[in-house]
Length: 347
Image (cartoon, rainbow, N blue to C red; front, side, top):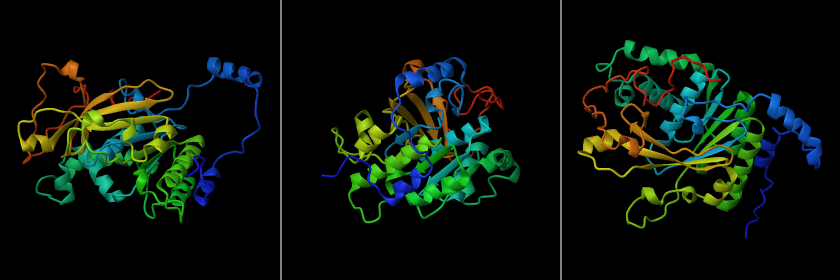
């Protein structure tokens, strides 16, 4: 049986270098006055909001470990890319480092350009210049340039010690690891639980050093009770692969599942997916589930009314696949998944 205590490996030791030495035990009496002073006169904890309410549950909070899981192809990476973009547009102090084991930095940037410009991703990746001009992507390029010196990407090797080195070089306050199960650590250790224990211990050490650590996780392959594939109603906190280590190690956990609904065509099912982002765990903040629309053609999420709010309401028409989706107006579309208020800075 593997011990539940964190393994002492070189990987864990590297992350531990970012922490200050811990003092001995302290009494309540010695802490109470300083805690009271902080409550009455101190600054609120630092957080990087992605938008105004109801997005508070999705703020990036340095010191916390967040985890998000979903079945393959749900758009986990696209969602986090959009969240990071908007958090950095709103918060000039936000510095991000993204570790993505499946996409190159160029691929991730092209997806951002598609979302911000409305130019279909297929046109951008295929360099289909007949379908768009430079003027179509220039606003997106300018937006990305405004945060370009605060957004970093890490390439291979995707090892824990390389991540720690990159953190020390960049000094981010938001670290995205996409995805956790593909990060190499613990050379010579084959036990899955021991490896995950080390990774989660390192994530906590990095968070304690003042970083919001965001962990993208695979979903455990459990057979649906209804047979075939994943069942949205059966995916929850226990669906994280190697669940026990992630479940107890994170401060906030989200799972994203597709909403059961009737679609009118194969084209509609491919272009627009209605998803539920379930906030299944929160240690320090209120939980808030969100209903989203994902337009894969431009890698864009939008906030939708809840099912009760949307009852009887007709969803906007699905744009044809042969043309560019219509541009949405940030100022007039209250459900657009983007921060409202234009250039208003978060406080």
